[in-house]
Image 1: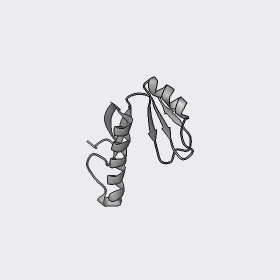
Image 2: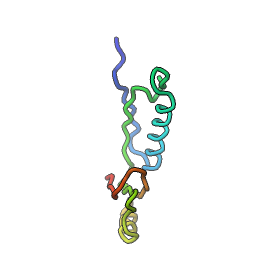
Image 3: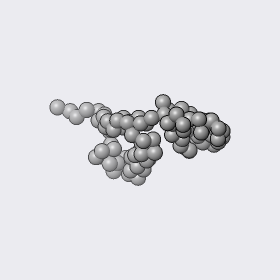
Length: 93
C-alpha cells in the first residue's frame, strides 16, 4: 500500500505568534535542503493545519490601524502582529 500523497498535521488553535513561528521553522528546514536532500520527516509532504486561537489583525508596510482602533480591538480580545509582506491591515477571525 502506498503512503498518502500528503500527510495532514493538525495543530488546532494556537496563539498567532506561535503559529507564525511554527510555519517559519518548517519553511526554513524545507529551504535548507532542497531537492533529494529535503527533509523526509515531519515537514516533507505535510500540510500544516492550524488557526489563530482568536482574532488577529496583521499590519505591514503601510503601517497598521490607528492607536484608537487598536485599543478598541485589544479591548475586544484581538491580537496584533506586524508581518512582512503585508501591505494593509488584515483580519484573521
